[in-house]
Image (cartoon, rainbow, N blue to C red):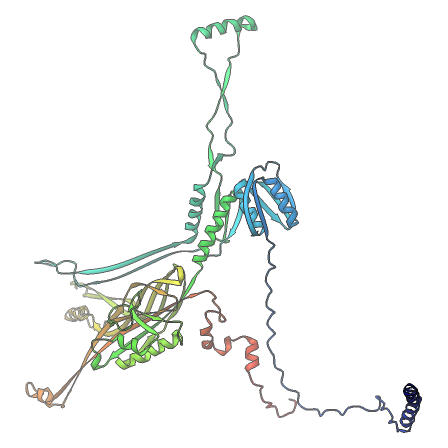
Length: 614
């Protein structure tokens, strides 16, 4: 009974499924169907027309970063006393290269190379097998080593420079003294630098090739010339003459000759040809010699092409009364924790007092917070505690390695020297007096010469010479009044003539220091005393001798100042506004900015035409 019931119920549910489907279809037919809109009759509303926005030029997207050159395929080779030809064929087969081998190439090779490129393996094999190779695309040509001409590109100026400087002081006024011994003394320091890059490079390459060079017969040498053979003895000569005359018609016999070697001229197989105008050096040498030449040129150009940016700040500090002995650099060190003051080329430990009258070093610790420019500004602010500070100049100059550079910001002052020529008068002619004026000029301002040398670890050795000059006063030439007085006594009527010569005060120093790139050297201790005075008096009474001193007021003032020079060299690896010179970008004017930046930053100009057409 249970099975039948389950079967009957299942049958009843199966009969109800078609009824449910029919009911769903009927209800769907009774629903109201909305008509579909025609796309041709209905359009979206038109947006209100207005003033189009101003065109804005946006910069182009930067180019995608280059993926770099594909990594060269590497191979591993381990051979012992293998014929060079067999090794070359194996390398060409595995590297899928076309190979041409000269028939005269012989030799064996033993090497163990792990994960090296084809050129690296061939370079090692060329040293052992005395061969050279050339790659042209997928073609490899191998031949015995022989001198071949190669061209090297040298990007350097075709210029020979001579730099000479001299600094000195003398206490003598005249060259000789009369009636006693001379007490004069003088000190002079002169420097001479000669930079002849192309001449030195050519000579160095020739010396480099001469050590491994070989000689070979020069082309066009004379061939061996025959010479008459001398007989061994006089008797042998007579016997030979008789025998030859017996068998030779006419009795004449040719004299036997033997060739003698003429002197052969030899020359070096390697040669160097330099063309500075085009920047090309051509070298004729063997494969091994070319390897040394390439290594030497790479080292020379890497060192000669290094550039140094030198930033100098020259500050004059008018010392206050409590610091008349000079700047106390220990206070500056305590005020700027990131800085250490020490002698040039060394770093003093913290807490050691340092004098302010010797060249010193201002070292920056890059691992701490801050930057060098901020710390220098902090040091300048601390200098104000010793008195009023005045920045005289902030020159910046770039120079190549071992190249002298000079910065000159001066004003040329013109003064005249007068020369008089007097001719006494005679009975027939009056006296004559001739004055000749000769213009002279003197430069007043700042002159700084510097020569850097970049060593290992970006240590810069500098020879520095800053010179600061100014006009103190003018003095009259004493010879001019004498000439005028003599001329007037002889009846020559001359007007007043004045010849004022400027009196120049010069402060300069010269030193050789070593600074790390980014550190700042401090040179101080150039002190100066300025004494000035003025006198005020009561009119009339002050001119009375003796009594007038009671009605006068005399004032004398003195001012002591110290000159401080901050010097910071920086080795420049990328001389661009996006590289090491990025700090100079804010100093550029608006006109020097790139065109897309100016157009993007400039606001849209207002419409002032009133909306009408002209």
